[in-house]
Length: 230
Length: 247
Image (tube, each protein chain N blue to C red):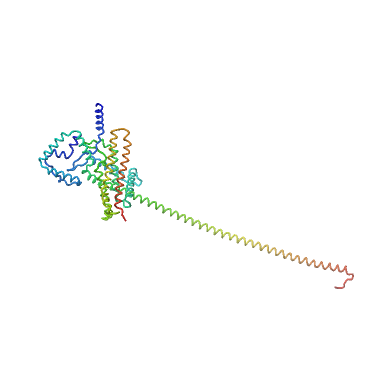
C-alpha cells in the first residue's frame, strides 16, 4: 500500500523517471485554472529548468537509492504525511464543482423554483379572489335581509294603519248607534213626561171640581141660611 | 513475547479490516490538471437525483397537490421562508441560489449517510458525500462570497464599500478580514462536520459492527440536515447583510 501511494506521488515520479526537464505546462489554457495551483506548477517547472542536467541526474539517482533503502517506519510516516496533505488538496475539482453548482442552480430554477413558485402564487391569488367574492355575496345576503326587514316593516305599518282605520270606523258606527238609541230614549222619555203632565193636569182639574163641590157642601152644612147668591 | 506478537497481529488485522481511508482520492487527468473523480461522480448522482425528482414532481402541477408536489411545495415554502427571514422583502431573486445551496448540500450529506456508496469499489479512495471534499465546500463558500458581493454592489453601487468603515474607520481591518473569514468558516464548518461524521461512523463500524453505530448514524443524519440549513441560512444572512441599508 505504501509503495503504491508513493508511486502515485507526483514530485517523486517527475524526479526519477525524467531527467529531461518536462515541458512547461503552458499550452493548455482552455480550462480556467485556480491561481494557486498554476503558480505552484510554474514554480516547480522553473526550479527544474534551473537545475543542470548533471545535477538532476545525480539527484534522481540519489532519490532512487534513498527510496529503495527507506525503512518501513519512515515510509509509513511519508504515507501519513501525504494523506494529511491530500485532505486539503485543491485542484480542478473546485472550479468544476462551481460550474456544476451554477448549472444545477439554473436547471432547478427553470424546472422547479420558478414554475412551482409561480403556480403557487397564482393559486394563492385565485383563492384570495374566491374568498373576497364569497365576502361580497355575504354583503348581498345582508342587503337582501335588510330588504326583507324593510318589507316586513312596511307590511306591519300597513296592517297597523288598516287596524287603526277599522277601529275608528267601528267606533264611529258604535257611537252613531249609541246616539240613535239615546235619541229614541229621549223621545220616549219626553212623550212619557208629556203624558204624565197631561194626566197631572187632568187630575188637578178633577181635584179642583171635587174641591168646589166639597166646599159648597161644607158651606151648606155650616151655614143655615142658604146664601142667595154668593 | 508470543502474546505481544499475537496482539500486534490482531491489531494489524483490525487495521486492515477497518481500512479507514482519509484523504485518498481517485484521480482523473484532464489536460494537465487532476480532479477528484469520486467527488465528481457522487455529485453527478446528487444532481441527477435533484433534477429527476424535481422534474417528476413538478411536471404537471395540480391545484390540489398530490404527494410529490406537496413535498416539493413544502420544501419551496421552507426555502422562501428562510430567504425571507434573512434577506427581507427583496428575497425573490435569491430563492434559486439559497434553495440550490440547501438542496445540494442536504442531498449530498444524506447521500453520504444513506446511499451504499461503499459497494462500488474504486482503485483509490472511496465514494462518499461530495461535501466530504474540501473542494466542494470551498467552491460553495466562494460562490456565496461572490453572491453577497454581487448583491451589495448591485443594490448600492460603490457605496457598498462604505460599510467597511461603517461604525468607525478603526474597524476597517476587521471588516476586511470578515470577507475572508466568512467563506473560510462556511467551508470548513461543512467539510469538518461531514468528514468527522463519516469517520466516526466508519471507525465505530470497524470496532463494533453491530448495534452501537446506529445512534451515531442517526446523529449523523441530524447533523447533516442541520449543516445544510446552517449553510443556506448563513449564506442568506450574508446576502441580506450586504443588501440592508445603513440609513
